[in-house]
Image (cartoon, rainbow, N blue to C red; front, top):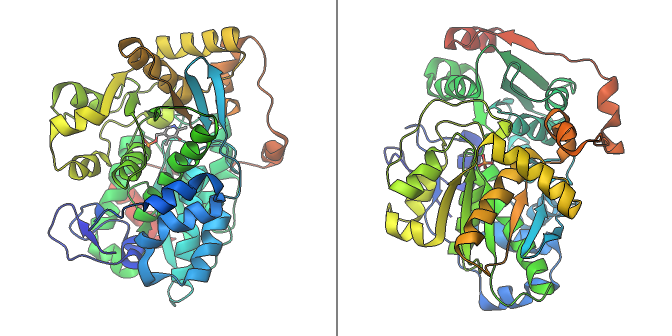
Length: 434
Ligand SMILES: *Cc1c(COP(=O)(O)O)cnc(C)c1O
């Protein structure tokens, strides 16, 4: 498999080069040269396959010969080594719970797959690799955990001060070892812009091999397809007649775009719903055909506070920029903080199910779609555990959300971060000095 740059100024590369580089030299995102098709045999056998087997079958064509089969099978098995349950919540609505990994958010899968691939590739290299990543909340923790202790890999995380939840901040700042957290005095878009600029800085990249672990990296983006296959296994087992409507809480649109890719490979899905908070450039495009990124605003679903969703270009590419074709498969909804809060309260009271703010955005959007399409059953992606957002959830449901025992250790560890001005000069100086 080859990957071409969506800016079309850089040569195509293989999976190894795309994973190490993150972004193409011309600043474009990498995109697979062809979309593998799931065979009818694979789709028929799906209900009987283990998660590790599904992961291997889906990822193998994308990885090509850059990782030997036995190694890739091991990486796949480790990546999906926890549950992805599809839990009924209300009539016609289930939750695909993606928060049973080590950092309780869906980004664990992409981060685990990428860190293991990069660990394999860097074991072949002499010079250490620096993973530079901007986070609006969950990416950083997932990436940090994925890479913790991987030899030959340094991780530098930029996060916006005061704009991630206390638990997210602990997950970013308490690991130590090969992980450093830079606490940027700005918002997520500042962090993302700084990272992008660093990748374009040839003097810097000549001194330090930089790679990106944001969802733009193909090794993080592509394995997110697996959620939709695991969901389909369970959807079939539950005896549903029609393929599901799938609602995806979206920020950078990596997760949703991965679902669309799985669908393009042949996975049955009835319709996709892009659920956005007030940062709705993507959802607005789906309604109007105009893509107008704007500065990010803060919401209670902070991992989706992205003004300029970087993966959106991949969605456009997948559909060859045909707005009508996109609209047939994908609808966009904007969900206010007030509706998100009301949804958390209502679903807890009526169904005894605890939503986090991101899952709640998707739950509400799914309901909007179903109101317009009666009888369309589906599920939403519950992308984070509600315990990660106690300051939002607890006042709404009226009781504390218990921290899973697996995370108790975090509370004992001291925060370690490096304050950073939101300027490229500051980041550059730090990277060259550190
Ligand atoms: C990152 C994140 C999202 C948004 O996913 P994208 O792939 O950026 O669209 C949604 N929910 C949570 C909890 C996240 O961490």
